[in-house]
Image 1: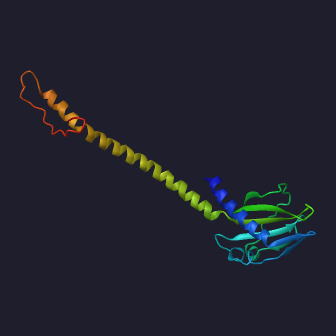
Image 2 (image 1 turned 120 degrees about the horizontal axis):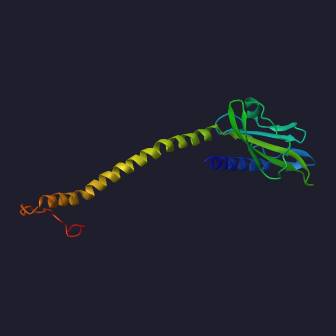
Image 3 (image 1 turned 180 degrees about the vertical axis):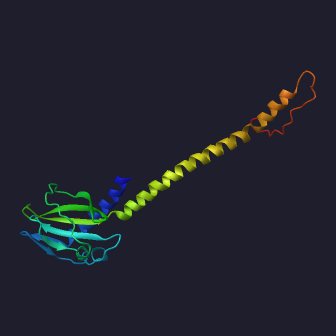
Length: 193
């Protein structure tokens, strides 16, 4: 379940970073914002369950660009030793909040790493949903097993009722009592007919 949860969050983070990259330009170690539309979205400006917290920082850890809601939320620790040239993900607790973070190095035209994008989102709501699914299954699975057991017993008794009746009548037939008859209204297409 946790891998599925992370996969969903990671796809959202990657999508948002790709949208951010489409609106910035890295030239001679200078990062320029060409299109502010992505950063003006509510997810980057208010704090809510689906908020994103953006930090773009240089290799010395100096914050170059930050989303507006980051200043309301507070500091999210930076990870400077990113060795991956692709997306890197991790979980982090900041105060009472569980965050899922994504990092992506930024390179200039010469291929030199000049900055790192860090994008974070809350993991709390997703964890809540996952916890509810687990609790639901813990209660639901035993209930389903009990229903199946009782239904099986009921169907078995109902299926064997005609046979039990025949056995009971056969036990009553003896050398002294040959008048007992097995009465059964058989249907021509069932097992007894």
